[in-house]
Image 1: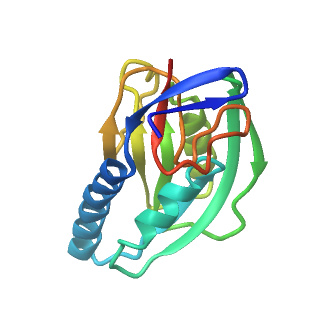
Image 2: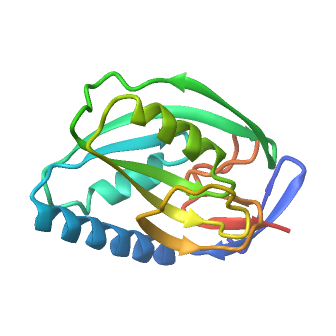
Length: 179
């Protein structure tokens, strides 16, 4: 589909599924390289809801032993960030002394990531790394290093491949930009 309509908004195709999968291949390759080299077992933390598709596709490509868990944080309402992050589901595993890899679908302002990073640091991990499929450098206000980036994109509102507009569009295999 070249365009989709979700509720009152029109979106145009910007990143076809094949490009998304290529970006995931690159991220997985870098993660595999780093963890084969250091021999550690990464503990992936997937940020729901948006990163579920990225997490599933990425983990299929991870060749080193690993663990995964899920957390849910939210800062979006409609098409803009509320600036307020609410923790909805927490991490139950003991991650002290572990190398964590946070999996994000998208990093834009960095508000959600900063909140999660602060919460994870309280759990005494050895290290926290960040992998994101998409990064909006023009919107980023944070200072947390992003270790693995699939693709840098413009500061536009997008849907598809796990990303939504008021709950719709997560199931689309491609990524679309608001017209």
